[in-house]
Image (tube, rainbow, N blue to C red):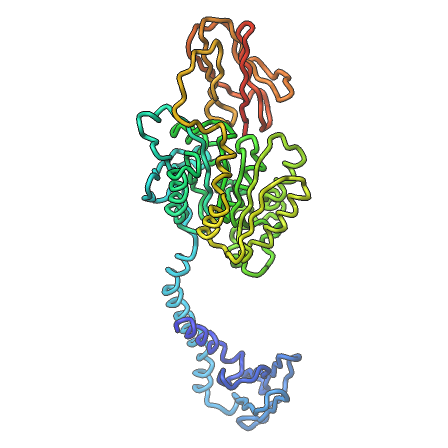
Length: 502
Protein backbone atom coordinates (compact mmCIF):
# COMPACT_ATOMS: atom_id res chain seq x y z
CA UNK A 1 0.00 0.00 0.00
CA UNK A 2 2.84 2.38 0.80
CA UNK A 3 4.44 1.79 -2.60
CA UNK A 4 1.09 2.37 -4.29
CA UNK A 5 0.68 5.59 -2.36
CA UNK A 6 4.16 6.72 -3.39
CA UNK A 7 3.37 6.06 -7.03
CA UNK A 8 0.19 8.12 -6.74
CA UNK A 9 2.08 10.97 -5.06
CA UNK A 10 4.64 11.02 -7.83
CA UNK A 11 1.83 10.98 -10.39
CA UNK A 12 0.02 13.93 -8.90
CA UNK A 13 3.27 15.86 -8.40
CA UNK A 14 3.42 16.05 -12.20
CA UNK A 15 -0.08 17.57 -12.29
CA UNK A 16 0.74 20.22 -14.84
CA UNK A 17 2.80 17.92 -17.02
CA UNK A 18 0.06 15.33 -17.48
CA UNK A 19 -3.67 15.28 -18.09
CA UNK A 20 -5.84 15.84 -15.04
CA UNK A 21 -8.10 12.94 -15.92
CA UNK A 22 -8.28 10.34 -13.09
CA UNK A 23 -6.07 7.26 -13.76
CA UNK A 24 -9.00 4.89 -14.09
CA UNK A 25 -10.68 6.88 -16.89
CA UNK A 26 -7.70 8.25 -18.79
CA UNK A 27 -7.22 6.83 -22.27
CA UNK A 28 -3.80 5.53 -23.36
CA UNK A 29 -3.37 8.51 -25.70
CA UNK A 30 -3.96 11.92 -24.16
CA UNK A 31 -3.04 15.57 -24.49
CA UNK A 32 -1.06 17.62 -21.95
CA UNK A 33 -2.29 21.15 -21.23
CA UNK A 34 0.15 23.62 -19.68
CA UNK A 35 -0.84 26.99 -18.26
CA UNK A 36 1.30 29.67 -19.96
CA UNK A 37 1.29 33.46 -19.44
CA UNK A 38 1.11 34.28 -23.15
CA UNK A 39 -2.58 33.34 -23.25
CA UNK A 40 -1.95 30.16 -25.18
CA UNK A 41 -2.21 26.46 -24.40
CA UNK A 42 0.58 24.10 -25.34
CA UNK A 43 -0.78 20.76 -26.43
CA UNK A 44 1.64 17.80 -26.31
CA UNK A 45 0.25 14.79 -28.02
CA UNK A 46 2.06 11.54 -27.19
CA UNK A 47 1.73 10.52 -30.80
CA UNK A 48 2.97 13.73 -32.40
CA UNK A 49 4.82 17.07 -31.98
CA UNK A 50 3.78 19.87 -29.67
CA UNK A 51 1.25 22.42 -30.98
CA UNK A 52 0.45 25.88 -29.59
CA UNK A 53 -3.13 27.14 -29.85
CA UNK A 54 -4.25 30.68 -28.93
CA UNK A 55 -6.58 31.01 -25.95
CA UNK A 56 -9.56 33.38 -26.24
CA UNK A 57 -9.92 36.37 -23.92
CA UNK A 58 -12.66 34.69 -21.95
CA UNK A 59 -11.72 32.49 -19.06
CA UNK A 60 -11.54 29.17 -20.87
CA UNK A 61 -11.52 27.60 -24.25
CA UNK A 62 -12.66 24.19 -25.35
CA UNK A 63 -10.27 21.98 -27.29
CA UNK A 64 -11.08 18.57 -28.60
CA UNK A 65 -8.23 16.06 -28.80
CA UNK A 66 -8.84 13.84 -31.82
CA UNK A 67 -7.76 10.66 -30.00
CA UNK A 68 -9.09 11.25 -26.51
CA UNK A 69 -12.81 11.38 -26.93
CA UNK A 70 -13.29 14.16 -24.38
CA UNK A 71 -13.08 17.96 -24.02
CA UNK A 72 -10.43 19.75 -21.95
CA UNK A 73 -10.76 23.17 -20.44
CA UNK A 74 -7.67 25.37 -20.41
CA UNK A 75 -7.41 28.24 -17.92
CA UNK A 76 -6.68 31.77 -19.08
CA UNK A 77 -4.52 33.30 -16.33
CA UNK A 78 -5.29 36.89 -17.42
CA UNK A 79 -8.89 36.71 -16.24
CA UNK A 80 -8.10 35.14 -12.84
CA UNK A 81 -7.30 36.94 -9.55
CA UNK A 82 -3.56 37.26 -8.88
CA UNK A 83 -3.79 35.52 -5.48
CA UNK A 84 -5.59 32.59 -7.05
CA UNK A 85 -2.93 32.28 -9.77
CA UNK A 86 -0.09 32.35 -7.24
CA UNK A 87 -1.77 29.74 -5.06
CA UNK A 88 -2.47 27.67 -8.12
CA UNK A 89 1.16 27.93 -9.30
CA UNK A 90 2.50 26.90 -5.86
CA UNK A 91 0.50 23.67 -5.86
CA UNK A 92 3.06 21.62 -7.85
CA UNK A 93 5.79 22.62 -5.37
CA UNK A 94 3.65 21.52 -2.43
CA UNK A 95 2.78 18.25 -4.10
CA UNK A 96 6.46 17.66 -4.99
CA UNK A 97 7.54 18.09 -1.37
CA UNK A 98 4.77 15.75 -0.34
CA UNK A 99 6.06 13.18 -2.84
CA UNK A 100 9.59 13.52 -1.43
CA UNK A 101 8.24 12.95 2.09
CA UNK A 102 6.30 9.91 0.95
CA UNK A 103 9.37 8.52 -0.80
CA UNK A 104 11.45 8.97 2.37
CA UNK A 105 8.86 7.13 4.46
CA UNK A 106 8.63 4.34 1.90
CA UNK A 107 12.42 3.90 1.74
CA UNK A 108 12.59 3.69 5.53
CA UNK A 109 9.91 1.02 5.48
CA UNK A 110 11.38 -1.18 2.75
CA UNK A 111 15.11 -0.73 3.41
CA UNK A 112 15.26 -3.67 5.87
CA UNK A 113 13.64 -5.86 3.23
CA UNK A 114 16.09 -4.77 0.54
CA UNK A 115 19.03 -5.22 2.91
CA UNK A 116 17.92 -8.72 3.82
CA UNK A 117 17.69 -9.60 0.14
CA UNK A 118 21.36 -8.82 -0.42
CA UNK A 119 23.87 -11.62 0.36
CA UNK A 120 25.81 -10.90 3.55
CA UNK A 121 29.48 -11.25 2.64
CA UNK A 122 31.97 -12.37 5.26
CA UNK A 123 34.99 -14.61 5.53
CA UNK A 124 33.94 -15.87 8.96
CA UNK A 125 30.61 -17.69 9.30
CA UNK A 126 28.83 -18.92 12.37
CA UNK A 127 29.58 -22.51 13.43
CA UNK A 128 27.23 -25.25 12.28
CA UNK A 129 26.34 -28.07 14.65
CA UNK A 130 26.10 -31.47 13.00
CA UNK A 131 27.32 -34.97 13.95
CA UNK A 132 31.04 -35.32 13.26
CA UNK A 133 31.40 -31.74 11.96
CA UNK A 134 34.03 -29.41 13.45
CA UNK A 135 34.46 -25.69 12.89
CA UNK A 136 37.77 -23.93 12.37
CA UNK A 137 39.43 -20.73 11.24
CA UNK A 138 42.86 -19.79 9.98
CA UNK A 139 44.52 -16.50 9.18
CA UNK A 140 44.57 -15.86 5.45
CA UNK A 141 47.38 -13.76 4.00
CA UNK A 142 45.33 -13.30 0.83
CA UNK A 143 42.26 -11.98 2.66
CA UNK A 144 44.23 -10.24 5.40
CA UNK A 145 41.92 -11.70 8.04
CA UNK A 146 40.60 -14.92 9.53
CA UNK A 147 38.68 -17.29 7.24
CA UNK A 148 36.34 -20.00 8.52
CA UNK A 149 35.61 -23.53 7.32
CA UNK A 150 33.90 -26.73 8.48
CA UNK A 151 35.20 -30.30 8.29
CA UNK A 152 33.32 -33.58 8.61
CA UNK A 153 35.69 -35.95 10.41
CA UNK A 154 35.52 -39.64 9.49
CA UNK A 155 34.11 -42.07 12.08
CA UNK A 156 36.74 -43.11 14.61
CA UNK A 157 38.89 -40.10 13.82
CA UNK A 158 39.96 -39.56 17.42
CA UNK A 159 40.30 -43.22 18.41
CA UNK A 160 43.77 -44.14 19.61
CA UNK A 161 44.14 -46.81 16.93
CA UNK A 162 43.62 -44.19 14.19
CA UNK A 163 45.76 -41.35 15.49
CA UNK A 164 48.56 -42.20 13.06
CA UNK A 165 46.20 -42.67 10.14
CA UNK A 166 45.87 -40.21 7.27
CA UNK A 167 42.77 -39.67 5.16
CA UNK A 168 41.78 -38.50 1.68
CA UNK A 169 39.64 -35.40 1.42
CA UNK A 170 36.57 -34.26 -0.50
CA UNK A 171 36.41 -30.46 -0.88
CA UNK A 172 32.68 -29.80 -1.08
CA UNK A 173 31.93 -26.31 -2.45
CA UNK A 174 28.61 -24.72 -1.46
CA UNK A 175 26.20 -22.94 -3.78
CA UNK A 176 25.35 -19.25 -3.88
CA UNK A 177 23.27 -17.38 -1.35
CA UNK A 178 23.52 -16.54 2.32
CA UNK A 179 24.11 -18.09 4.72
CA UNK A 180 26.67 -20.25 2.96
CA UNK A 181 26.47 -22.95 5.62
CA UNK A 182 22.83 -23.92 5.04
CA UNK A 183 23.54 -27.23 3.29
CA UNK A 184 26.24 -28.51 5.65
CA UNK A 185 23.96 -30.52 8.02
CA UNK A 186 22.23 -32.41 5.19
CA UNK A 187 25.30 -33.03 3.03
CA UNK A 188 27.54 -34.01 5.95
CA UNK A 189 24.94 -36.49 7.22
CA UNK A 190 24.78 -38.15 3.78
CA UNK A 191 28.56 -38.57 3.68
CA UNK A 192 28.67 -39.74 7.30
CA UNK A 193 25.98 -42.38 6.75
CA UNK A 194 27.80 -43.66 3.66
CA UNK A 195 31.05 -44.00 5.63
CA UNK A 196 29.31 -45.78 8.52
CA UNK A 197 27.66 -48.22 6.11
CA UNK A 198 30.91 -48.86 4.25
CA UNK A 199 29.56 -47.56 0.94
CA UNK A 200 32.18 -44.80 0.92
CA UNK A 201 35.77 -44.96 2.14
CA UNK A 202 36.51 -43.01 5.29
CA UNK A 203 37.54 -39.52 4.31
CA UNK A 204 37.52 -35.91 5.41
CA UNK A 205 34.79 -33.75 3.86
CA UNK A 206 35.91 -30.12 3.87
CA UNK A 207 33.36 -27.31 3.51
CA UNK A 208 35.25 -24.13 2.51
CA UNK A 209 33.77 -20.66 2.85
CA UNK A 210 33.46 -19.38 -0.71
CA UNK A 211 31.29 -16.32 0.10
CA UNK A 212 27.63 -16.06 -0.97
CA UNK A 213 28.56 -14.96 -4.50
CA UNK A 214 32.32 -15.51 -4.60
CA UNK A 215 32.15 -17.91 -7.58
CA UNK A 216 35.38 -19.60 -6.32
CA UNK A 217 37.23 -17.07 -8.44
CA UNK A 218 39.74 -14.39 -7.53
CA UNK A 219 37.71 -11.24 -8.11
CA UNK A 220 39.25 -9.11 -10.82
CA UNK A 221 39.75 -6.16 -8.49
CA UNK A 222 41.40 -8.37 -5.84
CA UNK A 223 38.70 -7.75 -3.24
CA UNK A 224 37.61 -11.40 -2.96
CA UNK A 225 40.51 -13.85 -3.51
CA UNK A 226 38.33 -16.95 -3.09
CA UNK A 227 40.40 -19.19 -5.37
CA UNK A 228 43.73 -18.24 -3.81
CA UNK A 229 42.44 -18.79 -0.28
CA UNK A 230 41.25 -22.33 -1.02
CA UNK A 231 44.04 -23.50 -3.32
CA UNK A 232 47.06 -21.91 -1.69
CA UNK A 233 46.01 -21.63 1.94
CA UNK A 234 43.11 -23.86 2.95
CA UNK A 235 44.37 -27.09 1.38
CA UNK A 236 47.82 -26.89 3.05
CA UNK A 237 46.12 -25.96 6.32
CA UNK A 238 43.79 -28.98 6.18
CA UNK A 239 46.66 -31.33 5.36
CA UNK A 240 48.73 -30.01 8.25
CA UNK A 241 45.94 -29.87 10.84
CA UNK A 242 43.69 -32.84 9.99
CA UNK A 243 46.04 -35.58 8.77
CA UNK A 244 44.86 -35.29 5.18
CA UNK A 245 46.95 -37.15 2.62
CA UNK A 246 49.01 -34.57 0.67
CA UNK A 247 48.53 -36.15 -2.75
CA UNK A 248 46.35 -35.34 -5.77
CA UNK A 249 44.99 -38.91 -5.80
CA UNK A 250 43.57 -38.21 -2.34
CA UNK A 251 41.70 -35.02 -3.31
CA UNK A 252 38.29 -34.60 -4.96
CA UNK A 253 36.65 -31.25 -5.77
CA UNK A 254 32.87 -31.45 -5.61
CA UNK A 255 30.16 -28.84 -5.42
CA UNK A 256 26.55 -27.87 -5.96
CA UNK A 257 25.35 -25.05 -8.26
CA UNK A 258 27.94 -22.27 -7.88
CA UNK A 259 30.07 -24.89 -6.14
CA UNK A 260 29.74 -27.20 -9.16
CA UNK A 261 31.03 -24.33 -11.28
CA UNK A 262 33.95 -24.01 -8.84
CA UNK A 263 34.68 -27.75 -8.87
CA UNK A 264 34.83 -27.71 -12.66
CA UNK A 265 37.20 -24.75 -12.57
CA UNK A 266 39.50 -26.38 -10.04
CA UNK A 267 39.98 -29.74 -11.74
CA UNK A 268 40.75 -28.22 -15.12
CA UNK A 269 42.89 -25.36 -13.81
CA UNK A 270 44.70 -27.40 -11.14
CA UNK A 271 44.77 -31.01 -12.37
CA UNK A 272 48.02 -31.51 -10.46
CA UNK A 273 46.05 -31.02 -7.23
CA UNK A 274 42.82 -32.96 -7.82
CA UNK A 275 42.31 -36.45 -9.20
CA UNK A 276 38.60 -35.91 -9.82
CA UNK A 277 35.72 -33.48 -9.78
CA UNK A 278 31.97 -33.72 -9.34
CA UNK A 279 29.80 -30.97 -10.82
CA UNK A 280 26.26 -31.16 -9.41
CA UNK A 281 23.62 -28.81 -10.84
CA UNK A 282 26.54 -26.62 -11.87
CA UNK A 283 26.16 -23.06 -12.97
CA UNK A 284 26.72 -20.69 -14.58
CA UNK A 285 28.17 -22.67 -17.49
CA UNK A 286 26.91 -20.33 -20.21
CA UNK A 287 29.49 -18.04 -21.77
CA UNK A 288 27.24 -14.98 -21.50
CA UNK A 289 26.22 -14.39 -17.91
CA UNK A 290 23.89 -11.52 -18.76
CA UNK A 291 21.92 -13.22 -21.53
CA UNK A 292 18.32 -13.91 -20.53
CA UNK A 293 16.79 -17.34 -20.51
CA UNK A 294 13.95 -19.27 -18.88
CA UNK A 295 14.30 -19.86 -15.16
CA UNK A 296 17.69 -18.18 -14.74
CA UNK A 297 18.82 -16.34 -11.64
CA UNK A 298 17.24 -12.84 -11.72
CA UNK A 299 19.08 -10.42 -13.96
CA UNK A 300 19.98 -7.93 -11.16
CA UNK A 301 21.77 -10.75 -9.29
CA UNK A 302 23.67 -11.86 -12.39
CA UNK A 303 24.59 -8.25 -13.17
CA UNK A 304 25.86 -7.73 -9.62
CA UNK A 305 28.04 -10.86 -9.81
CA UNK A 306 29.31 -9.88 -13.24
CA UNK A 307 30.39 -6.48 -11.95
CA UNK A 308 31.62 -7.36 -8.46
CA UNK A 309 33.45 -10.62 -9.22
CA UNK A 310 34.38 -10.30 -12.88
CA UNK A 311 34.79 -6.53 -12.99
CA UNK A 312 32.19 -6.17 -15.72
CA UNK A 313 34.74 -7.75 -18.08
CA UNK A 314 33.36 -10.35 -20.49
CA UNK A 315 36.84 -11.56 -21.40
CA UNK A 316 37.74 -12.11 -17.74
CA UNK A 317 34.44 -13.93 -17.14
CA UNK A 318 35.09 -16.32 -20.00
CA UNK A 319 38.69 -16.93 -18.93
CA UNK A 320 37.46 -18.18 -15.52
CA UNK A 321 34.78 -20.43 -16.99
CA UNK A 322 35.08 -24.24 -16.85
CA UNK A 323 34.28 -24.09 -20.57
CA UNK A 324 37.52 -22.24 -21.43
CA UNK A 325 39.60 -23.98 -18.75
CA UNK A 326 38.55 -27.34 -20.19
CA UNK A 327 39.84 -26.20 -23.58
CA UNK A 328 43.20 -25.28 -22.05
CA UNK A 329 43.38 -28.61 -20.23
CA UNK A 330 42.53 -30.59 -23.38
CA UNK A 331 45.37 -28.86 -25.23
CA UNK A 332 47.94 -30.16 -22.72
CA UNK A 333 46.49 -32.81 -20.36
CA UNK A 334 49.50 -33.35 -18.09
CA UNK A 335 47.41 -35.21 -15.50
CA UNK A 336 44.39 -37.49 -15.95
CA UNK A 337 41.25 -36.26 -14.26
CA UNK A 338 37.92 -37.93 -13.74
CA UNK A 339 34.79 -35.84 -13.99
CA UNK A 340 31.18 -36.49 -13.02
CA UNK A 341 28.31 -34.18 -14.06
CA UNK A 342 24.87 -34.75 -12.56
CA UNK A 343 21.61 -32.80 -12.49
CA UNK A 344 17.88 -33.01 -13.20
CA UNK A 345 16.37 -32.39 -16.62
CA UNK A 346 13.94 -29.88 -15.06
CA UNK A 347 16.80 -27.78 -13.68
CA UNK A 348 17.08 -24.27 -15.13
CA UNK A 349 20.84 -24.88 -15.62
CA UNK A 350 20.21 -28.04 -17.67
CA UNK A 351 20.54 -26.42 -21.15
CA UNK A 352 23.95 -24.93 -20.32
CA UNK A 353 25.10 -28.21 -18.74
CA UNK A 354 23.98 -30.15 -21.78
CA UNK A 355 25.94 -27.79 -24.03
CA UNK A 356 28.99 -28.16 -21.75
CA UNK A 357 28.62 -31.95 -21.90
CA UNK A 358 28.66 -31.81 -25.71
CA UNK A 359 31.64 -29.45 -25.61
CA UNK A 360 33.64 -31.90 -23.48
CA UNK A 361 32.89 -34.70 -25.93
CA UNK A 362 34.16 -32.50 -28.75
CA UNK A 363 37.35 -31.87 -26.78
CA UNK A 364 37.80 -35.59 -26.17
CA UNK A 365 37.46 -35.25 -22.38
CA UNK A 366 35.84 -38.39 -20.98
CA UNK A 367 33.30 -37.84 -18.21
CA UNK A 368 30.25 -39.33 -16.54
CA UNK A 369 26.93 -37.72 -17.44
CA UNK A 370 23.93 -38.28 -15.12
CA UNK A 371 20.51 -36.79 -15.91
CA UNK A 372 17.62 -37.45 -13.53
CA UNK A 373 14.14 -37.15 -14.97
CA UNK A 374 11.84 -34.56 -13.45
CA UNK A 375 14.31 -33.18 -10.91
CA UNK A 376 14.71 -29.41 -10.62
CA UNK A 377 17.45 -27.33 -8.98
CA UNK A 378 17.22 -29.13 -5.63
CA UNK A 379 20.42 -30.41 -4.04
CA UNK A 380 18.95 -33.06 -1.67
CA UNK A 381 16.94 -34.66 -4.48
CA UNK A 382 19.92 -34.80 -6.85
CA UNK A 383 22.26 -36.14 -4.14
CA UNK A 384 19.73 -38.82 -3.22
CA UNK A 385 19.35 -39.79 -6.90
CA UNK A 386 23.12 -40.13 -7.24
CA UNK A 387 23.22 -42.43 -4.23
CA UNK A 388 20.54 -44.64 -5.72
CA UNK A 389 22.53 -44.76 -8.96
CA UNK A 390 25.54 -46.18 -7.11
CA UNK A 391 27.31 -42.86 -6.82
CA UNK A 392 29.34 -43.79 -3.74
CA UNK A 393 31.51 -46.06 -5.91
CA UNK A 394 32.89 -42.85 -7.43
CA UNK A 395 34.82 -42.12 -4.24
CA UNK A 396 35.94 -45.73 -3.81
CA UNK A 397 37.40 -45.79 -7.31
CA UNK A 398 39.08 -42.39 -7.06
CA UNK A 399 40.69 -42.79 -3.68
CA UNK A 400 41.66 -46.43 -4.25
CA UNK A 401 45.04 -47.12 -2.73
CA UNK A 402 45.11 -43.72 -1.05
CA UNK A 403 42.74 -45.16 1.56
CA UNK A 404 44.31 -47.58 4.01
CA UNK A 405 42.22 -50.26 5.69
CA UNK A 406 43.74 -49.37 9.04
CA UNK A 407 46.69 -47.63 10.65
CA UNK A 408 49.84 -47.96 8.61
CA UNK A 409 52.45 -50.40 9.90
CA UNK A 410 55.68 -48.81 11.07
CA UNK A 411 58.21 -48.66 8.27
CA UNK A 412 61.90 -49.35 8.55
CA UNK A 413 63.94 -46.16 8.31
CA UNK A 414 64.86 -45.42 4.71
CA UNK A 415 68.38 -44.49 3.70
CA UNK A 416 67.08 -41.31 2.10
CA UNK A 417 63.61 -39.71 2.07
CA UNK A 418 62.15 -36.46 0.79
CA UNK A 419 59.01 -35.50 2.70
CA UNK A 420 56.14 -33.38 1.43
CA UNK A 421 56.98 -29.69 1.47
CA UNK A 422 54.74 -27.27 3.34
CA UNK A 423 52.83 -25.40 2.14
CA UNK A 424 52.17 -27.04 -1.19
CA UNK A 425 51.08 -25.43 -3.48
CA UNK A 426 53.16 -22.44 -2.44
CA UNK A 427 53.75 -18.85 -3.53
CA UNK A 428 57.58 -18.54 -3.75
CA UNK A 429 58.22 -19.66 -0.15
CA UNK A 430 57.95 -23.21 1.18
CA UNK A 431 59.77 -25.53 3.60
CA UNK A 432 61.39 -28.69 2.25
CA UNK A 433 61.89 -31.59 4.66
CA UNK A 434 64.03 -34.69 4.30
CA UNK A 435 65.41 -37.52 6.46
CA UNK A 436 68.73 -39.38 6.42
CA UNK A 437 69.30 -42.78 7.98
CA UNK A 438 72.99 -42.00 8.36
CA UNK A 439 75.41 -39.13 7.86
CA UNK A 440 76.05 -38.27 4.24
CA UNK A 441 77.09 -35.63 1.74
CA UNK A 442 73.86 -34.42 0.17
CA UNK A 443 72.75 -32.22 -2.70
CA UNK A 444 69.23 -30.80 -2.93
CA UNK A 445 68.34 -29.35 -6.35
CA UNK A 446 65.35 -27.98 -8.24
CA UNK A 447 64.42 -29.13 -11.78
CA UNK A 448 61.69 -28.58 -14.35
CA UNK A 449 59.52 -31.46 -15.57
CA UNK A 450 61.94 -32.12 -18.45
CA UNK A 451 64.66 -32.82 -15.90
CA UNK A 452 66.67 -29.67 -16.58
CA UNK A 453 68.33 -28.36 -13.45
CA UNK A 454 67.19 -24.91 -12.35
CA UNK A 455 69.52 -24.59 -9.39
CA UNK A 456 71.13 -26.23 -6.36
CA UNK A 457 69.26 -25.31 -3.21
CA UNK A 458 71.66 -26.65 -0.61
CA UNK A 459 74.51 -29.15 -0.37
CA UNK A 460 77.15 -30.41 2.03
CA UNK A 461 77.56 -32.83 4.91
CA UNK A 462 74.47 -33.65 6.97
CA UNK A 463 74.11 -35.81 10.06
CA UNK A 464 71.61 -38.64 10.34
CA UNK A 465 68.09 -37.53 11.21
CA UNK A 466 65.49 -35.01 10.06
CA UNK A 467 66.40 -31.83 8.21
CA UNK A 468 64.61 -28.97 6.54
CA UNK A 469 65.42 -26.23 4.06
CA UNK A 470 63.49 -22.99 3.48
CA UNK A 471 63.05 -22.41 -0.25
CA UNK A 472 62.52 -18.93 -1.66
CA UNK A 473 61.84 -19.40 -5.36
CA UNK A 474 61.53 -15.68 -6.11
CA UNK A 475 65.21 -15.52 -7.05
CA UNK A 476 64.71 -18.00 -9.88
CA UNK A 477 62.01 -15.98 -11.66
CA UNK A 478 59.88 -19.06 -12.23
CA UNK A 479 56.33 -19.03 -13.57
CA UNK A 480 53.55 -20.97 -11.89
CA UNK A 481 53.81 -24.69 -12.52
CA UNK A 482 54.96 -28.08 -11.28
CA UNK A 483 58.65 -28.62 -10.52
CA UNK A 484 60.82 -31.46 -9.26
CA UNK A 485 62.94 -31.55 -6.15
CA UNK A 486 65.82 -34.01 -6.21
CA UNK A 487 67.74 -35.12 -3.15
CA UNK A 488 71.00 -36.98 -3.76
CA UNK A 489 73.30 -38.69 -1.22
CA UNK A 490 76.06 -40.75 -2.82
CA UNK A 491 74.36 -43.25 -5.12
CA UNK A 492 70.94 -42.74 -3.54
CA UNK A 493 68.36 -40.30 -4.86
CA UNK A 494 64.79 -39.34 -4.07
CA UNK A 495 62.51 -36.89 -5.88
CA UNK A 496 59.30 -35.01 -5.18
CA UNK A 497 56.90 -32.88 -7.23
CA UNK A 498 56.09 -29.43 -5.85
CA UNK A 499 53.64 -26.83 -7.17
CA UNK A 500 54.42 -23.13 -7.48
CA UNK A 501 51.33 -20.91 -7.70
CA UNK A 502 51.67 -17.14 -7.94
